[in-house]
Length: 526
Image (cartoon, rainbow, N blue to C red):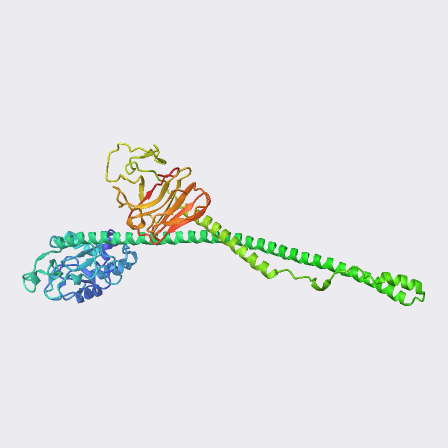
């Protein structure tokens, strides 16, 4: 007997519900064996009584009887029987609805049985012809939610009017006149919509990421600007402190020299007074000595010489006046203020020019915009007035009367800077203009009409506005720097060689694009 039993498989001694060695095995009318506890609990959870293995349906709950032979065999072979290990269900996974005791991970869910199965309990669906027709899907929780609460039928349709899932009976009752489609069809529609929504969401995410980058870039630029401002401020303040220290030393030296002069004057007067006192003391001694003389002849002869007083100064109008320190202080402070103002402006202008020069752009002149008298260099960096209009093709971009030329590049960036060489030109105009400006006929070149520029003619430097603003001209300009701050609405002009600020136009309104007037780095238009 023992020799015959050793060829049996371990599965012969395992309950198909708990997958463990039989414990009080019982048999169903269809001939399958289970632990009494497993099959009892399984049927307690079911509405209908069926075999978990072959799914044979019993109209009444079967009367279970102990399988005596199997029970004896299990007791005999229990030490040698090992149930093969199957994966247990992990958090987030769907458990097998048939397993009792330790629940295993489900691999499929049946939409006909509304049950999820592990590999072992799924086996009948892969073997029995009737079960093979059942619809198996990937494991899913809460299969009861797929049943219509009202009709206890599978939710397999979608009502497009009420936007709800319905069963077949629902379409014959509450949703009779509503358009209804299979779930798969509506799923495909909604999936397409979901793709569009996802695309829109991704676009919104990208827009916000770009905005974050823009904000971070602004913060970075602000930090860089702050660092430069601090460095420039330290440079300016250091130079001003140096000027103040120099003024202090000069002032102290002036005061000391005035004091020294006063002391020298006093010393001379005192010396002279002491000399007169010495002379007077000598005369006094002579007088006293003559008083005691009894020789009449000597007395009279000496007295004659004593009647003439010694040479002395009239000291009643002589005085030593203290130096006028208050006036000196005022004059020195006025000079210091003037010096500091000049130094401050020079240093601030120099620091400002250094700051805006970091935004320098490379520009070339556009021959399609040049008035026919203007001649451009091959590289588009220089322009001069030829004096005679050339026969050039007309286009909507070309200036016809004003001898102007624009650059090829147009800008809407936040800040730009360029330089124009104007040396040895009797007349020139430099600045920026809106791209929408007029090009034909006589033009009024003011900010109101989209022009921000300065021009030089007849030894006068002017910012073109209404009215015109005449600017101080310290020396002949050689190179003009132009800075545009799009956000601040600012256009500034600089004398690059002297490194001083010439003029700034504020409150400028720019459209989406700007173009630079005369952006050559070597020459300016006339």
